[in-house]
Image (tube, rainbow, N blue to C red; front, top):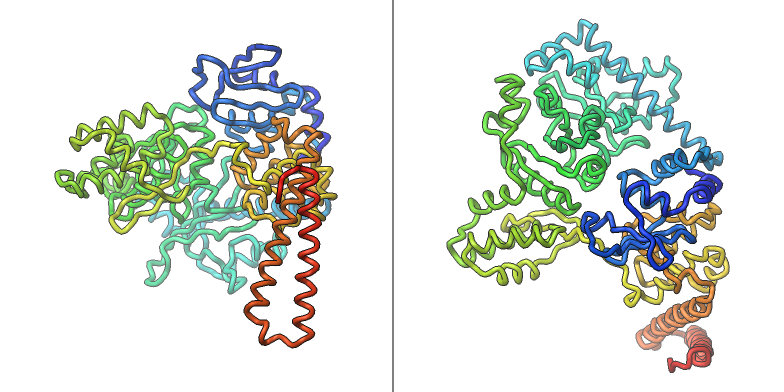
Length: 613
């Protein structure tokens, strides 16, 4: 992934104002000398009074309604559902700025390696496809596809292929094409423990492509029929491929998804995806040998506001449906469920009855709430008090993750009528249910446990001393080299502060000066949002806060010294009898030195703040 230079970022910011960027998406009004808009991130832009403040001087926005903050790049990321680099490219085109990247020797080497792996995957995908269509050995694969009802058009559309049974062929072929052993070992095409034994031999091959069409890896279906041979194999994660972040069929479905008229349809396997496309449902995709993940939800949310689920009708498929509903709903995306009646899965219906029958079987659906209610009624006895309680508990994660208060209220009203209990009692039961954020697991009673999707709001009043210090340093990164000698990573107790501290370290080493690039170095979403918010707040951005930073640094240092003294005292209490005179003397001397430093620092803090420590 390219890293765009500070010059590129600054040139874009020089040519565009924050208001101009926002104006390209939503109307902007001027009030009291500042530009405002109705927030596009909450209330669907229907606020009575605009709460979305735009600061052209500093190039940031902040919504006083939902707490969203950021710069022009963050705004485009969220409005267009793109990555930071894609936002830079969009704004560079708008501003007429030529893109420049930062690439040292290591970065160029890594980029060359990635491009080589992409090239290798594309080349071998084409070769597998050619073999499928032309090699006599691949007749078994062609016959198998015919038996599954897969058309020639779908074979071409998904570039299906065949990996020969000769286990020495692949390494010989790719070596002759000039690929090094180092690249072949990293490609995922060979067994990691038995190179050069191939991962795929005598298998029907499904190339996996990114949304951009780049060849990432493969899935292979066994055609030997031997026992103890896995039916499907997938490329292991490589420098260019991550199963969690990609979907089979995303490239083939992209044109339909971009139109925004059809929901994304999640099915269980590769053949199900191909079958759905053959039946005319060209927005179908599938996960890659893993459970459906939150990263895959994020990928789809770029293009659609509704995701439909159509997993297998067996017990495993139904469990997958429940877990996927929790992940999708946590992102505030509408979700519906299709239950096939004519077969276990889409490929089975296509094979037995053809594409028209599959299309007709796919059409009926129910929204996620209806689906969960229907399933819950079968699972729990809602005529009993305990059954009603378990039923509400089963639905609680879904209800908790409902972003719209109106939508949640309508669900609760429906449950109240169904169970013949008050809405207040249902709300009380829902409020009592906890759960880890992002979890989607079943407990011992089969109840799905999922966390709330609501983003934590930045609360300046609740900021720890650790977080205040690193937020101030994030706003004044030129001070970090000086203060890192006073505030060490080990002295920080706040996890978010530790995350930002590491980003400050990386920014200093890589000489990153722009706020936009610095934000991309913070991996935690809450921490990144808090830093972006701090850029718009005077208590962090103003240079006059230096005295507050000094006080925070002193308090963090004092806390660390007091903790070290407590450890030393515990050691003296526990081991004083076993210490020889020299060891005891040394320990007492260290305690005395700590006592003196603590006393000096306490007095300094008292003089500067007037507060007794």
